[in-house]
Image (cartoon, rainbow, N blue to C red; front, side, top):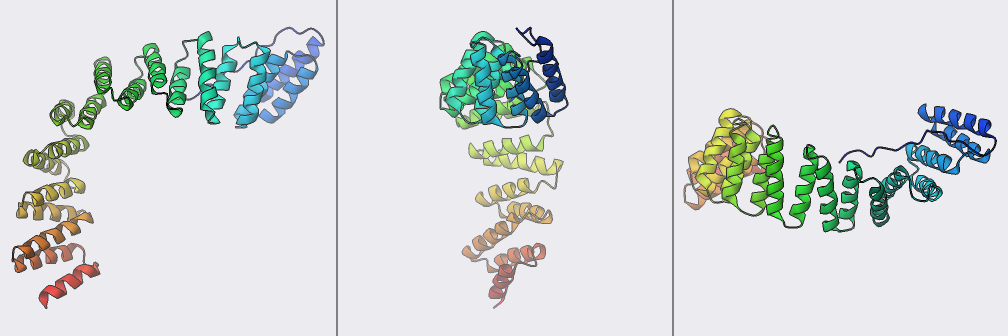
Length: 341
């Protein structure tokens, strides 16, 4: 989400009496504010109000100073005064108040205040984004979508908004709209290949493994050596029942990056489930060489299966290989001693 931009009112207006004195104090307060001396600025803003300065200007700038000091409850109170003094017609005061209320977790009031501010200035993209976030906090999914749709309409080039809006669609179970939006965003931003991966993720949520695989492969046509993406592809292939194709993809990963030990473990586990014992062994060895502790469990599983088949020598051999890579594992040592006895 975009950072909140504080609206600041530093413009001085004419006052009915003691104008020069009040103007001078306001100017000094503003200088202190610019220097980051917010506490001193607050004292002078209040003194300026006592000398006849416009209470709207002083309240607004006191609120800004309190905000900078992260005194949010006090800041909210000062913004409320500024809103009242302006009869609710100064949008920046409402935007700032809504943002402070958001930070205080006062989401229902923040939502209402954003609506008031946006009625005065509907082109504030950040406000629509914060409104969407505030709506999500109160469980208003429809309100979240409407706010994010407006933000995206105002700034369709911002890929982060496309992601946020698609997440809102997914939360509503509207996968079709999410996919359509992300595909449109990808056409507008063809360098953002992560959109294709995200489409694959959305299809996977729906357990549409074929479509998910297609989206991942489309992304891989652009970045063929992306091992993290290849791993995703292998994972969805395995989840969809294409075990041997998944194993081919994992082998490809390890050819690109032999140190990708999680891929080696995954390959070993798939080979184990397929009863392809020698392939599982080689994969676990590769993982063990890269210090992946999960390889030890793989060797133990191989040893147990060999024992169940009556292959006690094979069981001992698997544990012996494991011991070469994990010599400090006392349980493994005990298991080997039991087999020797």
